[in-house]
Amino acid sequence: GKTVVQAEIDAAAELIDFFRFNAKHAIELEEQQPLDSDGSTNTMIYRGLEGFVAAVAPFNFTAIGGNLAGTPAIMGNVVLWKPSDTALSASYAVYKILRESGLPPNIIQFVPADGPVFGDTVTSSEHLAGVNFTGSVPYVSLSLCLYWMLYIRRTFKRLWKQVAQNLDIYRNFPRVAGECGGKNFHFVHSSADVNSVVMGTVRSAFEYGGQKCSACSRMYVPDSLWPQIRQGLLDVHKQISLGDPVEDFGTFFSAVIDDKSFSRIKGWLEHARSSPHLKIIAGGNCDDSKGYFVEPTIIETTDPREKIMNEV
Image (cartoon, rainbow, N blue to C red; front, side):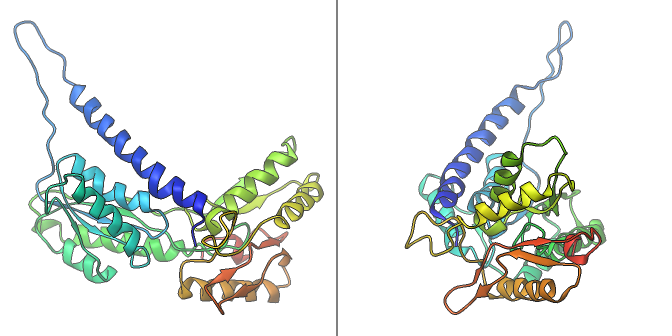
């Protein structure tokens, strides 16, 4: 359930920005030439890698999927693009637009596939020249630690380990690049402006349901400011509209991506209710009767080592 505003920022504006930026960067690279000495000219030529690039895309940003596949292609590479199985339609729409705009056939090959099967196949090919990976798993943020980044890191580690184990079969050294997100936090100073903290945290934590690697999932607040910030968070929380963005364009917070994410989040909500160290002060309910809806949730704790505050 991406809202209309978030969808426009992502699938349209940001993807266009990516392609424009990377075309500009390609020109800038070409202009970077070595110094010449008297009577001689030194020239550097950039070319694509020898082999193919495997682009593994996440579900949460259409722009990232298009960028992971499109940028290597701009730089002269052949790309195997594996989209997320929960973002096939949006990713395929981008692929079709690229083809209609003049992208030659087989430069980017759109390959919906099971993750481990795709990973095993590309890493066992002698022609693998690079891996371009971004992974993200849905969660509800702001102290409700549902990142499940351990899963994503396992995925990327597995790919990296397979590349290392197969190093002797490759025709060259594959370039491996990955972005796995993290457990972001806001560390609030005692001199901070309360309203800025509250609005910045709510936006970071709850835009797109917190389903992005840049989302805030925890915050550390000095005792001197917590009563004001706590009340500010509760006041703004009451104003958050939860619903179907197709029916109401003003919706701020919508459903999570799938039933697996819903079940994991529900499990953490149950943990929050049962733990003596945690207190749900806003939200905490969920409903999968029609879609997979989880209320934006704020949990209070004085134990920084509680497992909901750490990587899981």
